[in-house]
Length: 285
Image (cartoon, rainbow, N blue to C red):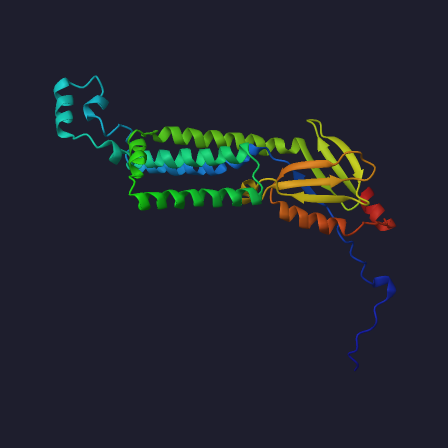
């Protein structure tokens, strides 16, 4: 008895599987406020630090009796005042609550510089080398001529005492999260969608649509700010669309290298789609 499989009939041959259509990529432009996320993270760290340090905000260089609530008896306040020795102003700078505040304001200053200035990669390298040269030059002068260069720095540190309670840091972080949530929702009001056959520009609250062809499309990738690129891989896309007088500039595109690779894949093929009778019937259903 033969076990050879019989050839399948043309009537029972499996139908060819329809390849899903390429969906393309979406490109969003984000506002610069999203680069403030390191400050929000540091604010949460500072809030946790103040929580574990019992939320001390009193200036330790002053008698503790000044921080006692006025409703306490004067005798109790005097006892507290006599039992606590005021701290030296320079040692006060190294207290945990002051160091947490310095960390917060340093990160805030860094984020503000990131948002305010566009620093190309070569400029920031030159600035870093210039700062390092000045630091080593000043240290060399101090060691060569036996100058007390740390005395002005210590005098400045003795006058710095910036402290905030746990609630301040938490409110700052929650406020930023709320703003970021609004930005995340409203990003759909203005975005681009690149398909193999066309480019769609969605904008406006009612999702107005503009269509452009992808034939002979050229695009350039730029990194105007190295700090923004380090934080979120942000950059700029410039699309040169045929028969359009001006170039389409898309600023603050996150993870610009991934978008560039995705655009290359989409632009490397032009989709020609032939609809069969079977697909037309399925679409009608």
